[in-house]
Structures are given as structure tokens and as C-alpha cells.
Length: 315
Ligand code: PMP
Image (tube, rainbow, N blue to C red; front, side, top):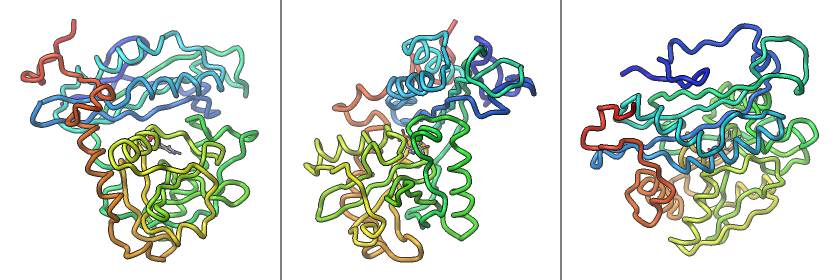
């Protein structure tokens, strides 16, 4: 099945979407990206894009930080994404990667006086952390401060920090890194937020702890409260609290909800998936696939005629 991209205001086969070697964003990391999941529901023969609008709202905020003036409204970006995924006709979980970038082919470090463009592409993509339980290591790489690169925007250049942490973790035999804030509190994984269960309640680093405000994080907070009656406290988390937690897990669009079995070779509680994590995983997996009617507002169906989902219905 061929993948498509939206590139230079057109839908083209992914293999034809190429940018010039002088593109400003390639040299200076001056782009904002998103990661959006399309979740395949095999019974309904439908792909549901999860919290599509919220992803583009976050991208819009990031564009403002990076002085990127996008020639599309959030509604238009949602529309383009739906059509792009429909064209690909995949019958499996997919991942959409939108990118808003400084597209001028001119050198010189700056944010001003540059053209901007938007592209997106779709690929089939299963679970990112493909394991029952992740082994994590506390990273020697700290999150950058707000006056270095704002860590709450998905700026491509910022992700050099995350890449350092991820490769260090893999090099040490872990699956994922846990990064700390500049002052040594728990921040997040290289592509996920982190939650702990302490005294039967959820705890997660607060918005000013150098995190990306994850959409999965928000989903988990809401599902825990509304479906399990479990409240979440957003606050500073000391690394030592990780070892006192009865459960620990990572959340992200790519990683879904991934339990953490051990941190720095120390087992978290029994090392097995905890009860709250298990319940949240079950809830989350039905919600993102459009199987829970209460949360259908979060799911955008892609195929107009799901019974013939392999036929592209667009013009
Ligand atoms: N933190 C970082 C650094 C990320 O890259 C991601 C993935 N977008 C997340 C957290 C989780 O965010 P979300 O749940 O919106 O995917």
C-alpha cells in the first residue's frame, strides 16, 4: 500500500515529497512537528484519528513560539489530515507526522524574514515501545530551561536533547530515558510523559517541570478521574519518589500507556504491571479505537464508507 504526503499544497506519493538541501529548517532545527495516531478498528473497518484538533492546537501554539505563520486554519489542517489518511487506505494503525517549517532556501540563523510551509505524511506504525514493561534509566541529559529552548513546544531542534537521552539509555541497556529538570526533578521520557502511583493516587510532573503537555497525559488524567475515580496531582516529583511508587508508567501518542518495570536496574514495586496501570491501558485502548461511545468526540473517523474502506472516496 503506498503512503502519501501532503507537500507543497498537494497530495503526492511519499517517495516524491523531497525538500531542497538549503532548506533553513534542515540546518537550524527551525520547525515544529506533531505526532498523531490513527487507530484501526477492525470490526468497524475504520481508522479513528485521536484528538486530532488538540494536536493541531498544540502545533499552532508552537508555531507562534517559532514565528511560523501557517497559511492554514486548524480546521483546514484537520481536513487535510483526514483526507491524507483516507487516501492511503491502510487497514492498520497509522501515525501521521505533520511538520510546520522554515522553508526558505537561504542560509543564516534567524527566525524572521523567512517563508514557512506545512507538510504531513502517514506511515503504518505499531507500538513505539514494543514491550510489556519498559526498563528505564535516569538520564545524565537534563531538559533545557525555558530560556534555552522552550521544552513545552515540539520544536525539532529541541529534540537533539531527547535524542542524546534516548541513545544514552539504549547504550546502557535500557529501553527509555527519564530526564530530569535543570534543578533535578523528574521531567519526562524522551518521547513520553511519566506517571507514578503513590498511596493509590496518580502523581505526574506539573506543567512547569520542563515537560511537553502531552495529549495522552491529559487523556489519562481525565479517564482516571471520570472512569476510575482516581485523582491526579500535578506537582514537582523528586527522583527518589520513583522508587517508592507502587506503579509507574509512560504515556505518549506513539508509546500509548507503557508500564515501567524497573528504573536504573531497580524494580518498581513487584516489577509487574500494577492494577491502576492495567485498568487505564484497557480503557485507553477502547477509547482510542472508537469503542467507547462516551469518548467518541475524541475520535475522527477517516473512511466515509467504512465497509469499503479500501476505496478512496475523495475527489
Ligand atoms: N514528551 C515528549 C518529549 C514527547 O515528544 C511526547 C510525544 N509527543 C510526549 C511527551 C507525549 O505527548 P503526547 O501524549 O501528546 O504524544
